Length: 127
Image 1: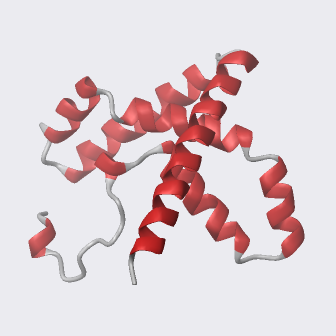
Image 2: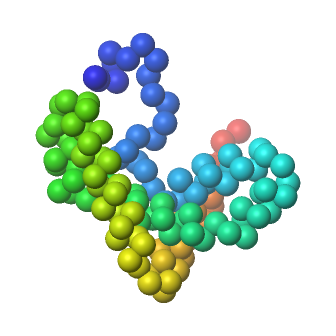
Image 3: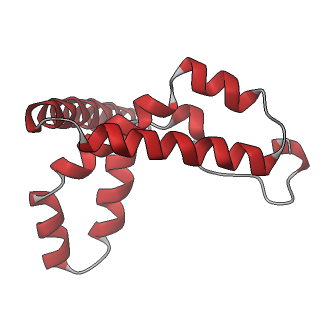
């Protein structure tokens, strides 16, 4: 189904623009609208989420996976392909060491910081 044929076009970033920084921002901004203690707890424990999202985003950007996904037109088959890939990524994430996860967390934090700085610059330059 093309974007033009949808009754209600998608407004999200889509699978091609999924990044660890974007996912972290969505998660944090969603939680911020909830109660204060939940937000503070989330900030203290967000490293695991950031590491997982970095691993997931990189895995879903794998060229072989994208070719297989884009080469399939049946939505049920696509769903199966994505489910299998996420299952593989979950297993590989669980097999990672704490150091590897910490590195993914650092990379996601850097990306989040850069993204927030760019957003701040754009907001300041826009009247």
